Length: 632
Ligand code: WTA
Image 1 (cartoon, rainbow, N blue to C red):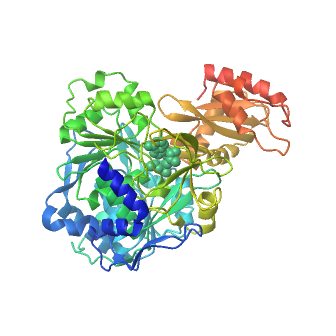
Image 2: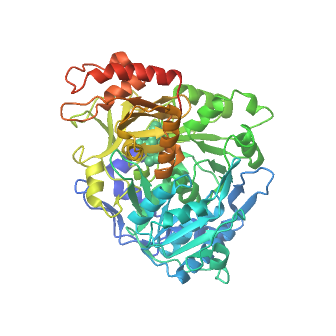
Image 3: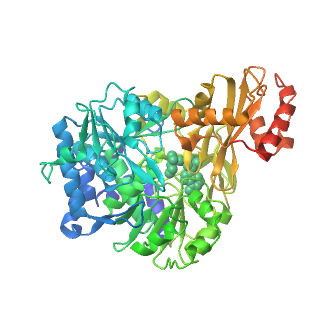
């Protein structure tokens, strides 16, 4: 712990020396002239100016001499009866080089955007790395998004290329990804070619001029490739995430700072050792998968399990089987999965040893004390430290977390900031709360290397979303408590973002989808607590005609949300009302409907200043009925 304190103090007092030393452990084609430049207030901060590098040389080439035959990925298929694949660093290097050569031959160049929509197979990691190898910017879209959501993201980033697969089984569900892509691309005239991996031999349509099989792209391609020299601040990837307003933002990360931060945090938070078998259950389609399934572990020469399946298939003991089968030592998952397993009782642990586990991690949403204790006791057998890691798509890597086995933990606390990170709590007026014991909105005071640089194509939006609320501070959108020990506990979003099973969902996006229904003239979506998902969506709709059949309406609304976003964003509750409570200026009072939906109608406060206070009584009655017998 003393070492942590010293490192932290140095990182704040002398950030250039601290991060320069961390960066020295990586391979550079040309060294930087300055560690940090630019101005936080002007939102033009940069890291490692004038350095040249390729992140994939750091993930792959530099390990080959010592670790070439070591496994980089253990691929565990959806069906436990199917064969496991072991992919060594040599194999991965060859696969990446061949695809990089193949993409180059197709005309993909440095700076081009490539959209990736794939199942959890090693070729997904290969796709990201092959793009990075040639300097193309990858934009991964999670495999649960709909055709419309893909199209929006492809068009926003102006992607000319896509990489996908025929499809996948997740649990017993068959997903034909290629046909979703086909539908999406009807709206994307800019896409020239689609590379298609034949993963499951599904019957799909290949459009002759546009679609090319993965195996044809890499055929005859060399197993070596001269990695393109990237400038430190050249974009590495775009990843879309939901905010409180409008369409999703393409969060932009650049090369050198992201690399240094992903590698440093992976090594330190998990205290990764060379003989560890690391397993992060996150999909590569989210930031956790980018930083802690692909870049972080590969930068450290780690061996990772890449799991195609789901925790409940073929039964709820599946995760523990995988832990035992591969002797997993570090296990990193989301509170939602923990609570879902907890709800199944203890039967699924029968016959499972879990003795290989050394460190447990949690990410994506606040972990409640009960789930933390359950995890600690039943999975960690009270022996494994839990690292509750707080961070965001925009932060590139973990900002607040214990260091495994070093920082004393406390259930439901993400504990202390990592070196280089200065968290501050502010009140609604933007005053910094200086006392230790405080609660407020969480901001970060100074740039760290992994920080997002922009929103793709819209730097003004980046500034207005993150740097305009509180002057000179990056605003996270999260509420947070700090205790007498200086430990941080994240309490959840304070904006209109709802965290459902660790998926960030913007209420505005869901409302836009529901508004498309011909009978709906107005709607509002709020988040309410949910025992397993953390939060779920509660939708209120005001209709032109009183709906006769709520089950039918609910189905239609689910269909719309699934089409516009993806089925993970469907509301759990639907309530039809004659109107929504509004201020005199016409703004919907979400606070009021949220309180009612949360089952606290007595806490809505004064409603006399509303434009239409009469609707509140009706909403209370309708919500009580819906909660008793939800239609969705
Ligand atoms: C929430 C996921 C509490 C938080 C890495 C944040 C957490 C949002 C934690 C970012 C945690 C993430 N404790 N809340 N350990 N980790 N969050 O961009 O609200 O998908 O703002 O990144 O998840 O979600 P994102």
